[in-house]
Image: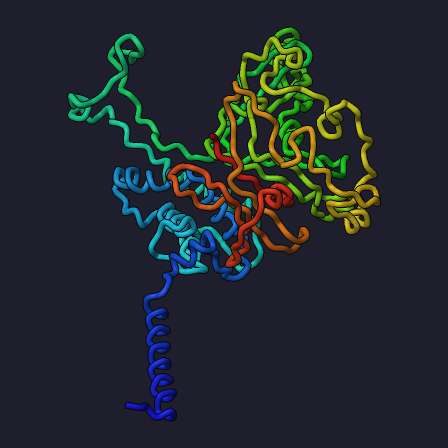
Length: 475
């Protein structure tokens, strides 16, 4: 049988069109899911709900810290059950859900994802989150403070008036010979907090009299982040190591009453007691699992006008914090002959402007508004310069200094928050590590996140960014 030439093309055209329509329908209904699409782009982005870039970068940075995700999950599974409160009533549950989405560990994925639940949860706790531009570091402190309040609920201590509870044979007491009450009975073991806040650390504050050498007991204060200020007398590139050394450098405090000096010169009235000059030093008494470093880029010039500092601050991928920890073993150190322990008491000029050869660079001209408006991170004293990425604190690849084998406090970079704009307006972006396939491990690659925009970037781009906040995790 011979097919007519006019019929054959029409029939196959109809069949081909129907097949194409069927394939398109199958692709629409059974094609790649949102989760698969997000994996192709490494992780989902976050919707900007109206000047909420400050929230998005903090959430992306927290998601890059495995210790934070593990801590929240452990609290919701154990701590929330012990307190008798439903897990969904916690801000921790809301943040944990968002972090799982950002790490591709949730089925509830749409790209970009809306963080509106976090804002709603904060407002329900009487935090004022307006539609105006906000600061990422301030929000970070709000989140850590609220999470700490939720997770720091210790188990109830047995009341001394509850005789039945005191006679419970399941009670645990201090070992015999360790501690006793005034009546000679054993003391119960106090409840402990098993899940410590990953960003919670302790600052060790020391005061030393310059007249008699009296040393006040070390005072410890809590911190969630370390705010590092830029030196006002210098305008140019610095390193995070120099800012940390400036942070622990002793300062002089005058008009402080010294108990030892008061004994040598007794006075009838307390207000007549002689005042002395003290040296005060801050070091790190306890380092957290996750370390947040905040670079204060806003300064006020002579006429009280706020300006943003655009200085390039180099930071390593691997950071050793051993030199900034409070330790009493430093008494033999000649740098601590005044009785202040921990770190190196190097002079400020060498800290801020020194080089590996010891040559001191002269300070720049005083800051003024005209100079601020014409300054960027590539100009110093009116001369256009190119950043030399190789410093005494790292190599050409922006690696940190070689960490000695005996280093105990070693951190690895997890994310970076940068601010684009001036002191009045701008936009926050974040560089974070990709989600890791291994639980508790940092990712190997880097991403650039700007609200809904997410793209892969090189390690060199991350380490060359204008950092505002740095997130490190202890390894």
